[in-house]
Image (cartoon, rainbow, N blue to C red; front, side):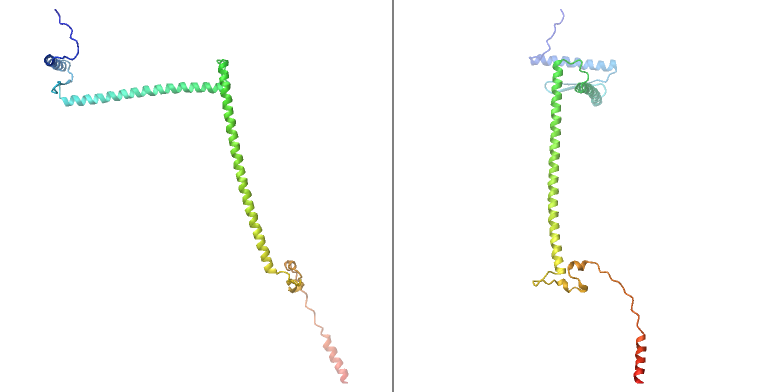
Length: 240
């Protein structure tokens, strides 16, 4: 009779479990040695019992096997990561192309193109979208115009205030000029006489003082030399 199949599960009996562990451990170590010799493979095997005891085998040295294993695992992981990253970006590119195609189709439909494949309901939805978009554009335009009008009103008020300030300054300067004018040219006294009557050259008012003065040089008069001669002659006649 052949051996029956053993159910692969934990053996409850501790004695049977220990016997099975020893047999299978020895068989596993023997297979590892045979694999390393027959196939020229680098083999490393480590076994820990339930009590924590270590059993190991290495065809070269356990450290070199572990280092080689870590290096190979790291390279394999990098390759998997690169492959996964490439696949990820491929999926992203495909999704973006699909979205771009959908947006281009919607844009053409909004521009009134490629409407042959749409039914009445689709056209109604498209019309509603256009009306909503137009309403939003008009609201934005009205808001911008309102803001510009308010800004212009604000600037107009500022300019008006500046003009009022300048007007006040001009009035102040005009009053200062009048006071200075009075101090320089004087005012009429209570008797009605004007201080400007004392101005030379017959100026009768302050306005005449501002009038330009025209001077003209006259030729010197010639002296009459005949008079002394006549006097001398008259004197001689009287003496005679």
